[in-house]
Length: 131
Length: 400
Ligand SMILES: [Zn+2]
Image (cartoon, rainbow over all chains, first blue to last red; front, side):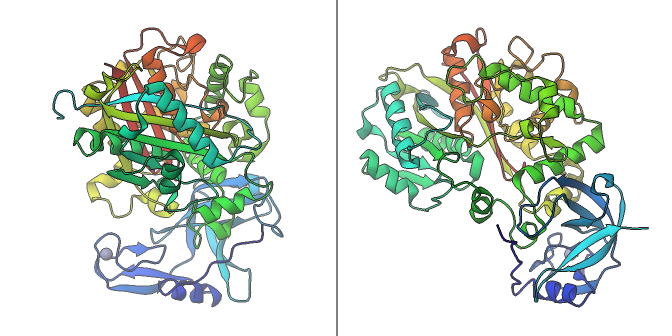
């Protein structure tokens, strides 16, 4: 199976544009301060529409993960670390941890944002182990 | 409270063979299962006026129930649907059928599943089919290489981190299901396995091994729900639906883990390892007026071993974090405190989706389970789970 590429939508385009630019932004609610991810039309906590695209620090930690022995995609080498990362700002995202030591990854590990271009139009936000 | 006589009961069961059914089509399996349930109950098919199916893996048509109804010659219905809640469509369906019968909307409702997820899916195409079926959020999870075993593995990893759960404890569940399957002539996987066999099987996605994962299997099931009063004229032994409950949460792991949007005071009640099944359970046990420890036998949805382990906690059999210990010392095997998945479960009986758990729960109350029968069953429990431990439904069955 070839790799699925995200298809940016009206609501998600600013996110994917920011990843392409190497400076990821997610939405922050101007009313309650919640950082939301994935992209939403209203704040999922307070229903405000005052959502502002805001840069993040890129620091986070691993909430949970798995090391898949084989990749599900052709052209992607296994093992693959799929993780749920909690950003310093509080939002979480499903992502990959890029590391030479996949079985050395652990919950709570500090990670930092990196970018992996996978097509002309799409750059995935991925994470590396923070030094 | 339903008026006396109008209470919903299960009055018919159909369960064709499971395993590798080369040459069978999903539609044919629906018909086979339906005819067995009609035969089992002795109902005149013209009295069936409710029909629910759930589509199939490769044919997720919203008119699926219409096609099946036509094949069966069940013409005019007063309630129908093609259920779209994945593996938990069947206890979801039992509860909907209960409402339809107890409100007087329907006289008798037929709930069906049939699929060939083993022999009917061309090799190497099932992952793509799962993605197109909608198993995972396609924009924010799929591109990172997520899979169904992978997401349950992420739950297991988190459970191990928070509570010290071990791979051996997960393996106990696979071993118990296999022991029970060995006593069930219909089961797909009957060769005995040990905890070591599970731990030595191929690592699919850490920490889940191949034998922690239910294998693809063809299979089907049919359940006929009617009122207690109507069941008196039928030939099968009716089984009461004493309590039902369902609860659904989220799709994206990021929001599931944080209980995004929940009341501030509720956020700490839910996480990747604390599911909304606790809410469904509270409703089902409350409606039935019984406690978890009153249940004689439980058929718990077992897509993966971790799916079962977390349910011991969320159903109230032990405190959060003690699910691992609950699997020990034969507690969940026949002869133990809570025999689980006496048919063998998805892990060893086979089939797919949650309908066969319901059928086994009803059979245990009927006392028809042969070598795997639990003695004097008064109350049995079945659960269905889907969408990464976020859609849950429960039913408690009892003697009439
Ligand atoms: Zn807000």
